[in-house]
Image (tube, rainbow, N blue to C red; front, side):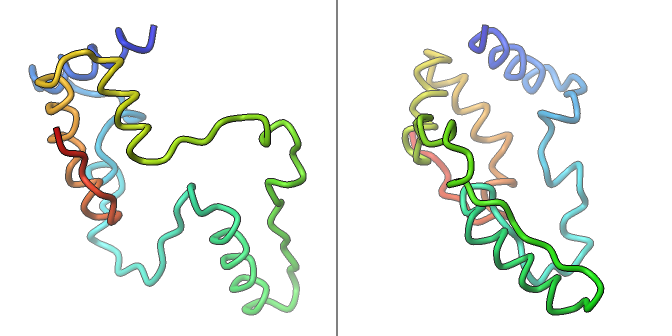
Length: 123
């Protein structure tokens, strides 16, 4: 279950075991600081950021015309509930059921929160 998965990640962090690249800190995986990005898109802004990116790409190429698919085109997505940042953090905290364990996750992923300009959850 999801709780067992989260506790496994927390235990791996505490014991400094190798973490699967899917769950590792983004700042460790991607060497983000080595590249001077002028723009970073975010999945929660996908409609806006996708349109922005395709406009930039189309402007820079006369051979390619890209269109970004809208979420409106997928009616199934409309039935799914979206969680805001606070609700998502509460879901994780309630699933873990231990504030110390939750803090281990927050501390581990803090560099990712900071570099992508997300609010770090408070206990």
